[in-house]
Amino acid sequence: MFFSTVEDTFLEQVKVFIPASAATSKERLWPFIEAAERKYILPLLGRELYDDLQLFSASDSGWSGEGEDIVKSTELLRLVRLSEINLAYFIGFDILNSRISDQGFQRAETENFKGLYKYQEENVRTYFKDTGYNGLDDILQYLEDYMEYFPEWENSASYTLRQSSILKDTKTFDGICAINGSRLIFLRLQPFINQVMDIDIRNVLGADIYDALQDELNSLGSGGDYLALAAEIKKPLAFLSAALLVKNTGTITDKGLYFESRSGSADSVTLTPGGVDSSNYAYYRSTGEQYLEGLRKYLRENFVDYLGVTGSVYSRDNDGKKTFFT
Image (cartoon, rainbow, N blue to C red; front, side):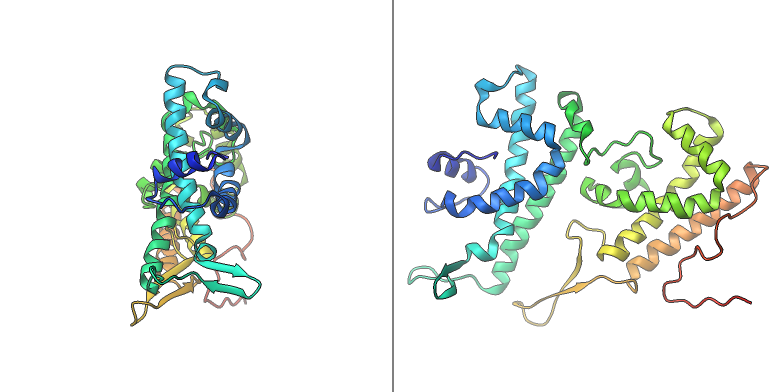
């Protein structure tokens, strides 16, 4: 854990980020801190860096680094704590606002303190969520900026610099298709980027060109023809993978799974799952298809052996359409 198990020290660490009262109990918060750490922090850091930072957090004297290593690790620990405590409050928001007893679940309220209005609850919940998720993004950016101090992060699943990929990093993707510079969104896009490469892009390139391109990327070579081809692939790859993300999760934001809207009452918030009829999905998909057509034109003009689209005639986007074969 990145927070002290000593009650007074724990409270002081929490108050650095959240103006908690002296009545804040480590015992009540601890399960949600553990949940936030397991769900978000451990996968983000990877086991090796996670263990090293745990050692640093538990005892400075047990840390083998010195000088600038300690400075960088101290700042990383601060970013981790900021994100973790906000996500803990977000995860445990409803439970922390409740009293659990033999009589069931009751709303915590006293003569001196009344519960928040619904819209205030939503604002506080949103603050914890946004601050927590933005903190995760800050952690990723910090690790990118100072990776020489945290080489073990390269072995983690959240490593965001993919040198053998056409879309190597968040900045490259964001320069084509806006994702607010979010490294979290870029990580969420990875399986969809792979899917578009394996299906849409491969079918357009054909097996021979696709395999030659992959060999060039994996060897980090600098072949002129394939570097230019990779540049042509970036735009359809970005927009088509963004379309898949929207189709599967609703919208490209850190909120992720839902479109959020307010009805007439300030206390009423409607959460609607995103679907394939979303105008966002249509935009990303149609833009990607237009860039894909540009890629076909480039191939016809620059690769003499190019034979056109390969693969199955059934490999097409059929959402909301009918297909007839004669």
